Structure formats: structure tokens, C-alpha cells
Image (cartoon, rainbow, N blue to C red):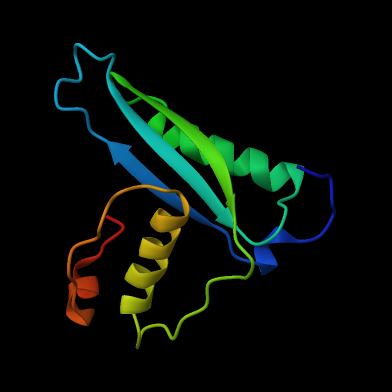
Length: 120
């Protein structure tokens, strides 16, 4: 990460979280959560530290679970017609999963499925 003074809050980066729930996690040392920082620019040192702190606050206290973060560089910022084309999110995430070589197919969705999302 560089020490650039550029304002990261004027651009968007995203986290893609893959929870690899192990069938018999007790015998295999717990679950592993892979976090990918999806970005089209290099974050400043402070922004990168903020992301690490956020991850640790969110995932650091999970029982019998470990996590690691890697950066997934993309060519351009994800842009879609919010709130009129929410299915673009599914398509973009499926693309990212394919880029990572992960063998997962997201379930079928409809626009109204995004109405059920909450940050509660």
C-alpha cells in the first residue's frame, strides 16, 4: 500500500466474503472465511488499515473460525443503475468468483430478492 494523500472516500472498493463452512469443522480446525478487497485503485495506508480493522471487528471474535484478506484488483470501478438494476450485483459477483477460480454458482435471483436485504 502506498502513502498517497489522495482521498479514498471519493472512490469505491468492496469486500467479497467467502465463508467456507467445513462439514466437520471441529476435526479440521474450524471454518475459514476468505475476504477479498475488490478495488480498481491502490488504497492509502490509512484506508487499508481501516479495512483491516473493520475485518477484525467483524470476524476476529468468531469462535473456531479464522479469516484472511487478499486484494482482488479489477480494471474499473463497479457501476450499476441503483436501484433499477440490482441483478447487476449478482452478475458482477459471479464474475469475481470466476476470476478467483472458485467453483460456485450463485442461485437464481429476481430484482425483488434485493428488497429483503438489511443491515440490521
